[in-house]
Amino acid sequence: MEKENVRYYCTAGNGMESFLIDEVKKKLKAEDVCRVPGKVVFSTSESIQRVTELKSAERLFLLLKHDTPLNLCAKPGQASNLLQSRLLGDIDSWTKAAATWSRLQEELVDRVQKVDKRGKERIEKKRKRENEEEEERKRASLDEKDRKRIKSPQDVEETEDNDGGTDPVSFRINCKCTGPLARCLSSQEAGRVIGVGVSRSLGWKSDLKNPQMEINVNLSDDQWILGMQLTRLPLANRSYLINTGVRSTVAWAMASLAHIQPGFCVLDPMCGVGTVLVEAALEHQDACFLGADIDDGQLQKANQNVAHAALGKQIQLFKASCMALPLPSASVDAVICDLPFGRKFGTKQHMTIHLPLIITEMQRVLRPGGFLVLLLTPQLSVHLKKHLSTGTPAQELDTELQCNTLEHQATFRVSLGAIDGLIQKYVREKNEPINTLSVALQAKSHSSIIRSKTFLSAFHDIMQK
Image (tube, rainbow, N blue to C red; front, side, top):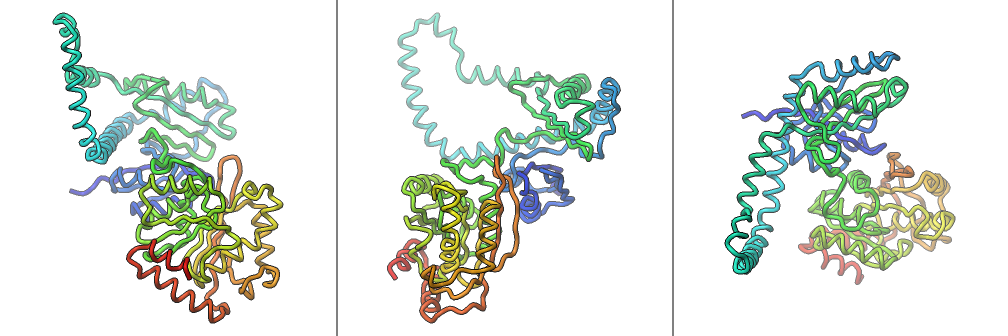
């Protein structure tokens, strides 16, 4: 039986749309992919489970309507009628979308139940024994009259199921109007008009506190898009992270630029709480990862994240300065780093002063042909560009590198919430001069990592060299 093609859209942080487009095409074999500011619209026949595993998306919706802009007139009454006509004129599309939404919700519930089933079975057996013992004690203390008043859990469950079958769908409208359109009709008024129309046309019940379905409406002078939210929590929420650092979606995007292959050794020399490492390791389970940080508190939180995500066999953390890494030259295949925005070094000025040495040390441990991916502020980017263009004398940096060999490949401006950051991608040139000692160290350490059955033993071997 051929799978049904479903039309979705995902929201994405500013600057993340291109990463999301690449991801849906690669993982979901998506078709009819359309980029909208802050959103990506696509069709796929892949299961909803696969769709909810997207890493660069914020929220997921079932697409209901996506059309040309609304030309609303200045009079509020006429604008309301036109809005209802355009959005609610085709009731069949609403009922079909509601049926698809219900089916997808059932599939999501089935998935959660299957994932939780094994772990819960063991817990439930223990709880069942404890509950039975507790019930026996309660029954012994209750007289017959009190016992008749108590409903069993099965009775309560059956009553809830019977009642739920007759209730209409409860919903809430989340509406946003932007541009000149907002002067004609406010977001609040547009949401009220659509809500009233949905209730009248479909018989659904408005519930602002705890609705079954959230309907998202975005109206602008360019286009309008309407969808049904599929998950209560954002896809960007990571259950496997207990300590948060950089945005998980941005961390994943950084890892996607490093071209990580099976057998690679990847380094984050300023790993913080380990968000980048965890996102990369979950995506590339046949690679190995190193994380360094000078701060004991950050390393403790990183260890907690690694343990919680069950990645202890893939990720090795150690305390070290990013300006003096205890690794041989050209020993890692990729370096990914979220450069602190002036906080770890106390001030932005201190970070600027240390930047040449930090970059040069990253360059030293990176093998020729390997990728360096950085997240940094626009201000630091200016200083980095200056350093890479002018270079820093080797004698000042006390390093064996004789020239700058990082080639810039791409820059992406992404939102980090209150501020923007730049993701920059570099590659270390292959034809640079490296002394004989470096070549020997590179060959020995790099090959041992790739061939090693256990990454940790290979890492300890390198650290002892």
